[in-house]
Image (cartoon, rainbow, N blue to C red):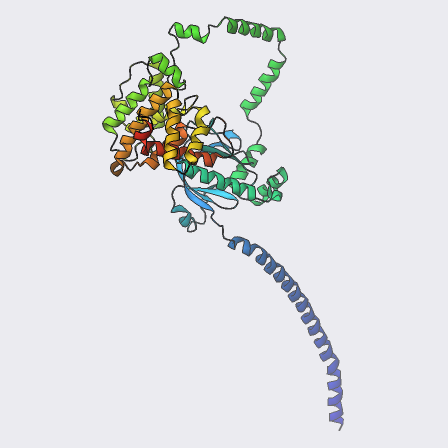
Length: 457
């Protein structure tokens, strides 16, 4: 009995220690559970972040338009660049344009995670037609808020027109709150790894170069110089300009010759004592001699540098031999002929006749339409009428070889429509005018014998 009591007592003595051990274990468990809750809350935050960022990477970019255009980057962050035209495959999405060398490249980019194509952010960008930045036709310019400038061009009128409207609509659709103010630009610089924006930030943050500081010091010193010296220079310049011979005097002395390119058709014909410019006849003769069977004649562009060289020769020299080896590329000759008509101060179809030709082509009755256009052609000034007649006769010979050169009357209408007739002031109906221009040329080619015949209807 005593032994059992002792054992009971010992068991009671052990119970407090057992309870204290249990309490310690409970505290450790509670601490662990608190740590678990913290880790659980952290994992919840992490999972929320994943939920926020994950869909962004999975949002597909909807391609609104893609195709080939000629591209030239002429400014980077406000710094002017040398213009260098190259063919690019453009991919237009809701907010940007990406440039690739070929159409297959966008599919290969996904296989190269490190590759980033050149692109243009359309947020806050400006788009406008330009004739000053390039001698090519159908050129428009995109200017971004970061100071980058791009020129885009195509010789085919409806293609470049579609691209212009597609990009303009994309810019206009961007929400107003996403327009790139200076604050938005700063936030973009923090968030984006775009080389376009970072390059702008870097150029602004760099200290001015040594030569820039020197030029600044020079300007400060010059501004403090004696004003009498500047006044003396101004007075001498005024005397020089007032004594300078007039353009007419220089032309009479033979120092400056009459220009062929850029002069009015009437002036060129009067100078040559003819009703059709000699250069036009030479180009037509060369094309009919060795270009009627050439694929894409008048549609394919020649080398611009060689065309400009031919233009210079025509303006400076009276004798021109288009059989010379330097003009062996017939596309150079056709390019120069198109440039001649494009640079006329007033087109071959005079401005005062433009609306009348447009009204005539709108008539649905072909007989009435041909009769109206024939009446307008007869009213044209003699140089315009005769030059038009010989040109359309030549283009008819081109169209007759359509099976070989692939140039139909419709193709020739697309090429020559905007070149030969245009409104004096461009309006919002540019697309409509372009359609009528093409149709007028096409109809005059298909009905050439009726329109230019001397017989009265």
